[in-house]
Image 1 (tube, one colour):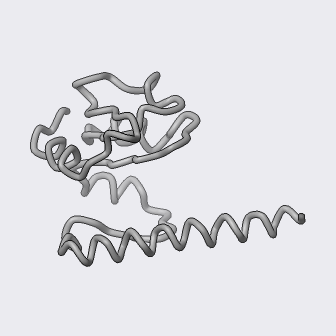
Image 2: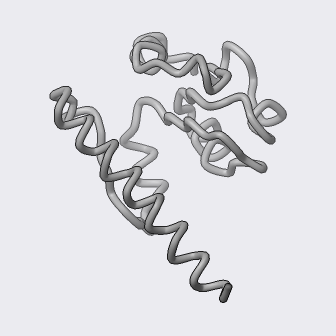
Amino acid sequence: MHPLEGETRRDRRIRERLERNARQVKERGLEDYFIFTGYRADIPRLLNASDVLVMPSLFEGLCFAVIEAQAMGITVVASDVGGNKESFIPNKSGKLLKFEQWDWRVCEDAQKRKYN
């Protein structure tokens, strides 16, 4: 298989998953709380306007998005995978969860508590 062919398949799966998530957000009437932006070059501006960074990942290396959000004083709710644990200050930066524990109420609670 050609490397680009693999990328195309992966991108299609990611796009399908994001489109499914966007439909669920709309079905639940939560459009005012989520923004599906696609590629953006102005991430610091977006983070600065955010209350919480939600990072539900199955796999991570060292997640720079988590580190950048913490550096900007933004509460983070992230999966307890990869390097997230090493870059996280428990009960100060936000909350780390096992993937099986994910629930939207946890994200809502994190926003209310404003760990930082």
